[in-house]
Each structure stands twice: as structure tokens, then as C-alpha cells.
Amino acid sequence: MTDSAATPPTTGSTGRTVGDLQRAIARQLASNPLLSTEAGWRSLTARLYRHHGPLLAHADESAPPAARIAQLVEACGAQADSADALADALDHATGQPDIALPLRTIADWLTARTLLTDAELSQLRELTEDVPPHEATASAQACLPFLSADLPRHCTGTWPTTLHLLRRNLLPSGLPPLLAFLEYLAAASRDQRMVLRAWADAKASDLGLSDELQACRQAAASFTLPERSPARVMFVLLPDGLQKDYYTLRMWHREGARTKPALRDEDTQAVSQTELRRLVAQRLRQWLQEAQDTAQDDLSIEFWLPLPLVNEPVWDWCADATQMHHSARNVLVRSLDRLQIPTIQSAWRARWENLMQTSDKPLTSDRVTPSTARTTAAQDSERPRPAQDLVILDSPPNDGEGRLQFLDALRNGAPAILWHRQDCSPAFQSAALQLIGAGPLHELPQRISALRAGHRHSAVTDDAVSDITLLWDDPTHTLPALHDLVAPSEARAL
Image (cartoon, rainbow, N blue to C red):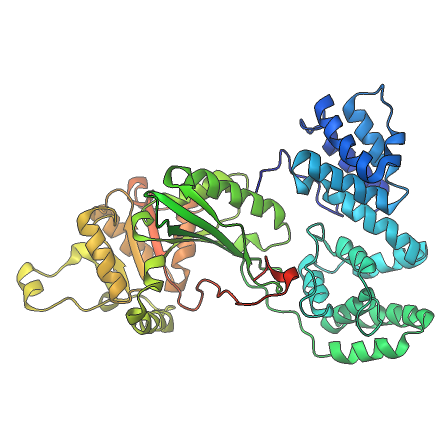
């Protein structure tokens, strides 16, 4: 996974015509350092020569490389296969698949012109332009057969998705996917239902597919848009069995705007502890660029960590990638060790349910353990302290005492553990209790996120909260289960 040199123009949003897209991508390519040299031009043309040589006839060899590439982009406004070929060549020459995404939409648009009249395309755009991208994505996924290939990466908006479906193979019923898509959009939209169905009826009649359309309409009648859940990114760090201070990094994510596939597993990679910060920031930055239609205002970034890593500065890792994004995000630590202790699962779930049942009420002292508010040593020796739902550590979990407290809290099933990465001082203990009591308990991750991001005034000192860390283990949101057998098209979308 590589970082793009520059963020590409949002697919389909730069204008209403193919020409708008061409001009936007030409400007983008002209500033790309990989393409502004003769070496970059040679790499691009070598690929084009093998797969679509005639396109090179449109480039003036006496012009600078950036001007020649602009000429190629302009020539792509005539044929869909030229746009596809140039996009493939750009992917190969730059190693940055995102940079050519607008060319994919151009290819779809040019193909659409051969299938629909200009008037039909204009009407279709007017009918779909107010549909939010996440509704278009959900409707497209619902109308396609089970185990169909995913929507390609350039389908980040409603119009690119609509154009792409025009190029899809016919459904098993013989109905074009576009008409099925409109039926599912209509089923989910009361305001646009009649006009969407009228357009589909007219087109199906022209194609002699009215019966097939009616059957699809009946199948889509019960379709409702899935509730948009918050986006969730999970970084899982598994200890390497052979090399000390090496971990296997896996990245899972559920995009709030997408319902199928619900989760994705990115490539697994072994990485040294010193490289974790850089690699996590790189992957998170790329995901933020790609997930343009995701509800990032409520994004949860989870780090599933073994005990040796629970005190790592994961907030700082995320800040490296999200500094240009101003939305508050929840950064949570999750316990990888807890999943590997089957005997505590029932206690964990019971304590979580107990915590959530009264999460809108103030947290009473019998449900929180501030370690500095201990009973006397004599009392401690007389009876064990009862297990609590939320634990505030005496010391960070990377030192001896804090490690024992952390493990004790895990074994007792405490789903929430709070500590300071550097010094769990009395000032921190007091600040933590204030933070817990400042609102409903289920909003504690949001309050901590706002505090860490500086989005709200705090009466406590900066030192007391600058490195506050929350382990928030929700047993209803764990890691995804791998399936034993999957179709080839779903191999990266478990």
C-alpha cells in the first residue's frame, strides 16, 4: 500500500461533463512528479504501446512530458477503451491507483453514451443527483446477485455508480443492472419513487423487458436502506512467534456507508515495533483518502493490542494521519489478550451489560475503582476488593504495579480501564473521575476524544489529561470471523 503523491479529484464531482473530468485530471497529472520527467513518460508509453499503441499518435513528441500526457487525456474523450487503457498505464507507471480514478468514470460515461441517448442520460442524472452516495452504494449492492464483484474504487459518488452499472453484465433474469438499481432506489425513496419507476418503465418497454422489470420491482418492494453505522477501523497487532519486538499487523475496516462487504482485511504484514507508528499512519491516511463517502464524523479507530503494546501512544499514531482532518474521532485501545481467555468471556459480557444498562445515569462508586481511593491496607487484607465495571489504574500498564492491576481488571471482566500513559498521579485520578461523571457513561469515549483533540474546554490541567488512555472493550463489537470458503471475487472482502 503506497501513499499518493497528491489527492486525486473526487470522482464524478468535478463537473457535469466528460470535459470537466478531463480538464481536472490533466491538471492533476501535470503536477505529478512521477510523470513530469522523460523517465516517467517512457514508463507510461511502454505500457501504452503494448496495450493501446494508437493512442500515442495523439501526443506531440516535441512537447514537454506533462503536455503530452494532457494530450493523451484529451484524446480519451472519444473512446472508452482509450480511457481504460490510459488509466491502466497510469496505474502501472505511478503505482498510485487513485490517480487514474476519474479516467475510469470517463470510460463509463463514454460507454453510457453508446447505450443511452443524451436526453436519457440527462434525465437519469437529474433523477439521481440528489441521492446521497451511501444510499446509491447500498442500493447497487442490493440489486446485484450475491457474491458479485465489488463496486470498483472509482464509484465514490452516485453518478459514477450509476454510470458503472450501465457497463455491468446483464442480471440472470436478463434485466440490465441499471434498471434493477433504479427499482431499489425507488423502493427506498418515497419522494422519487414515481419518477424513478416511470423512467425504468419506459426503458424496459423499449427493451422488451417489462415483465422482468415487474418481477424485479416485486423483489425490491421490501428493500430498506440499512442504518448507517459509524465507520470502524481496526488495527490488530499480533506478536510474532519467532522475532522479538516484531508484530503482524492486520487492518480491518467497516465503512459506515457500505453494507457489502461489511468488513475488509488488508494485506497482513510483519513489522518491527519501531516501524509501527509510520505504517499505521500510512495505512490510515490511505483509508481516509479512499473512504470519501464514509461517515468520518463518527469514526472509531481501534487498536487491538497485546499486553506489551497497550501503553503505546496510539493517539499520536493517528494524529500523524488525521492532522488534515478536523472531525473528532474516537481512538480506543482494545485488549487482544482478553479474546484469548475463554474463561472470562461471560464475566466480561455481564459487566458490559451492567455498565450499559445504567449508562445514562451517574456512575456510582460501587461500579468504579479509582485506585488511589483504596481502602486501608488492613481492609484490603481482610477481604478482596470486589470486581468493578470501570477501573482507573494506579500506574501505567507498562510498569510492574500497573501491569498487575491491568491483568487483574482483565481477569475480572472489567470492560473499561482508564489510565495515564506517563503518570497516574492523584491529579489524574481526580480528573478521570470528573470526566467519568461529566455525562452519560456511553459517551465517555467521545468526551475523551474531544478532550484529546482540544475540541472542548477542560477545567483540568493539560498534564493530567494529555496522555489519558481508555481501553473500551465492547463485547458486541469484536473482530470479524474468517469464513473457511469464499468465492474468488470475495477473497479480499471477508
